[in-house]
Amino acid sequence: MTPTCVSDATVEVNERIRAFMAARVGRPLGPEEQAEYEQLLVNWTDAIQARSTTS
Image 1 (cartoon, rainbow, N blue to C red):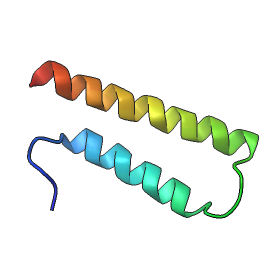
Image 2: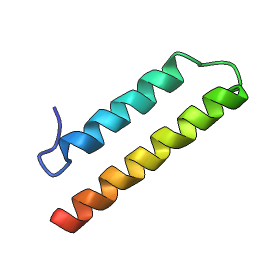
Image 3: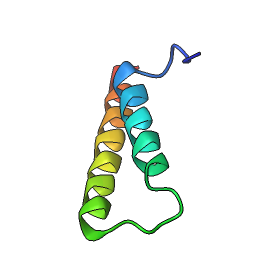
Image 4: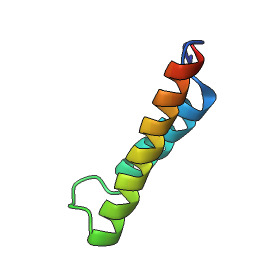
């Protein structure tokens, strides 16, 4: 169950991060994967900030 205070964008990005990391469990990220992970974190931060400004 998703709390109503969390935006759909935040939940979506969080799920993408979890799936990304689950697919790579037990090994270090390569350079391209690290860049992709960092972009996901930027997207998550943007979603959190957007949620803060609309609350």
